[in-house]
Image 1 (cartoon, one colour):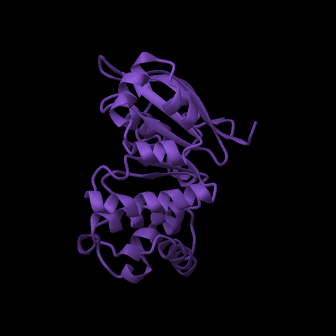
Image 2 (tube, rainbow, N blue to C red):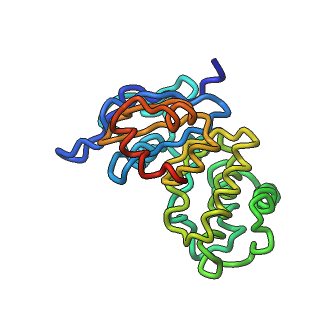
Image 3 (cartoon, rainbow, N blue to C red):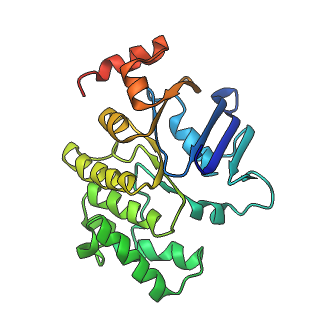
Length: 246
């Protein structure tokens, strides 16, 4: 067994009478790349938002390195600096430059000096190929470029885990590859990642584990070879049958 970072135990989430997540259980070890797949509305994005405390779970536990992050003594902003998130809609600050977007969190949350934060941000902007655009505002760059900036911004916080919420769903098809390429390179560097995605080829080829969700529950999880090659549940087979040619 590897180094355990995150444990989700008996997690449930309801919005009023609508039960979105039911008794979710799984663990994340250092270096894991876990793809969460399933039809729209199956609870995948809500699960990520609960893990990052953007939604408050109705019941259950989320433990980061053994500590229940739903406890009163946990500061969400500090926790999120360890568990970063990349959103499908980028969530960049439109009034800030590319560089400022990657600096501000380091200064405000990690209490770094602006000079130190700028140097650190540049490291990751170069890594994702966005160093030439540091003075641009988000409106001046493409969707794929925005998402690469969002990844650099998250990485600049030095998180232990990166959560990706359908990071390519808002992109034009020609831009999907450039973002998946960045994510693949992070996986090769053993960045711990939890990825909600409809990109089945990425889930099959890059993940260390795949989780299939249906109607708010985890139906099946396992290695990509097992889940794509020999799924056990009929729901999993039906879902994957649409992607056999990817």
